[in-house]
Length: 150
Image (cartoon, rainbow, N blue to C red):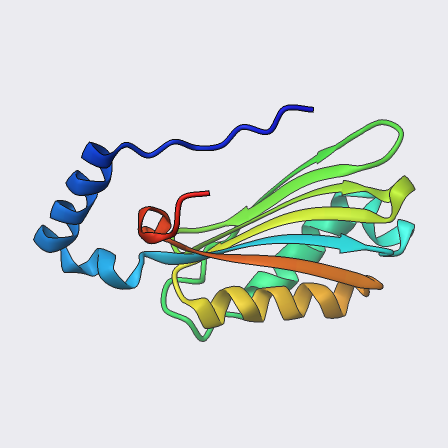
């Protein structure tokens, strides 16, 4: 298997540094993006689009003490015979899930303006979905170019 490695040219990195000087808001990042894998979650929680839609809405609506978290929009897609892709979003957050119930697995993206909001949604989802194992990578959006090249 081939692994692709992103290449960032010196010119691009220098232009990003100039942009940071012109717009200091990039120095602290724009938002938090959690990449989540959940393993050993119950089949019944992952198989049905309506159930997943309700779970996402419940997990995100608990963050209603954050500015702009009302007016959540939920979209779901039911795979045949089972499995789901679904999103819940508004102007301040976005949660995306893809499920493989036959493997007791779900992949999620949690994107929120506030770090605490993203983590609260994650904790809500862990409580509701009850996976046996969870892996999380956290990315501060607007900061990738400041990270070491891989």
